[in-house]
Every structure is written in C-alpha cells, then in structure tokens.
Image (cartoon, rainbow, N blue to C red; front, top):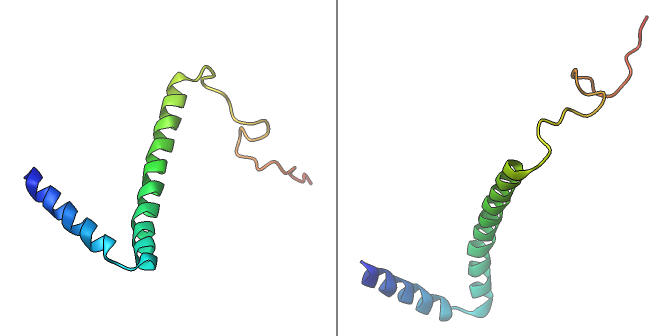
Length: 78
C-alpha cells in the first residue's frame, strides 16, 4: 500500500516539475492557499478552546447597557 502511494506521489511530482513555471505556481497556490487557510482555522479554533479552558476570568457578564437586549440607544419615553 505504501509503495503505491510513493509511486503515485512520484508521478504527480514528475508531472508538476515538467509544467511551465507560471502553471506550477498557479497549481501550487490553488492547492496550498485553501490548505493553509484550513489549517490556520483549525489551529485558531484549538487555541481559542485551550484559552477558554485555562482563562482565569470565568462567567464574566455582558457589557454595561447590554444586559437586557438593549442596543445602547436611549429609548424615548412619552
């Protein structure tokens, strides 16, 4: 199984190396940009989860003026 994967990777690598340079760059960016974005998103979520678990401030309230659903504007009273 591993041998098949290595042969496939070698074939893809050889195909990519034989392309003209601008097409190589376009293909690498088309694959790496979404891949890196996805990895960054997963890492960000993981760090947020770890930070939420180890933070010292727990159960903080909502900001002043927003505790009953108000938008911060004063209501006119008749």
